[in-house]
Amino acid sequence: MGHYQNFFIASTGASAAILGLLVVAVSVVNADDEDATTRERRTVLAGSAFVALVDIFFVSLVALTAGPVVFGLGSLAMAIVGLLATSRLVPRADRAGNFSRDFHGRRLNLVFATISAGGFSVQLGLAAALLADSRSATLQRALIVVVVALYGSALGRAWEVTGITRRG
Image 1: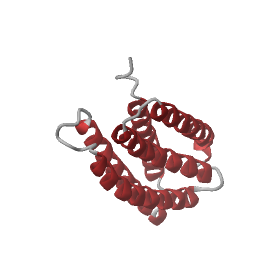
Image 2: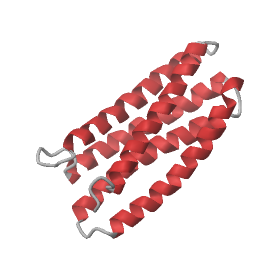
Image 3: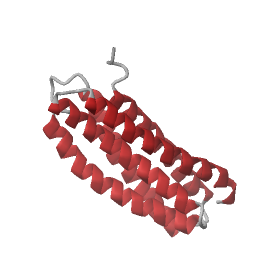
Image 4: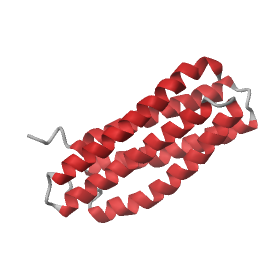
């Protein structure tokens, strides 16, 4: 895991910084909007981005402390947290109308929900496999790719939350 040390150092700092920016962004855009439904839609989307960023932060931080077994355990624990959080956020997003047929962001929200469930499930499976074979460089790299994919997903959600593409 030593050759990934710089990645994990950068990942820990970047995820912490983006988490802080996400909190500020949600506060600002929700203060601008009187519509409770829109605020709830943003809050749910921001919540899912927050979960992904927290996963990245803790997995990266834990990976710095020891070898592949600790990396696998941290990934396994955070995948479980991610799946539990997603299972609570998806019904809330549905109640907020994020998946309703007439909502302009329906497809994107469905993609985000699928990526969350799928990403955390893949992370769970790879972490369990790494714990069974802690010497596998392929499984270690695959879990790092999951971290990168979670970054992409979280940043996409954060971008949507701010409404930059629709703000005028």
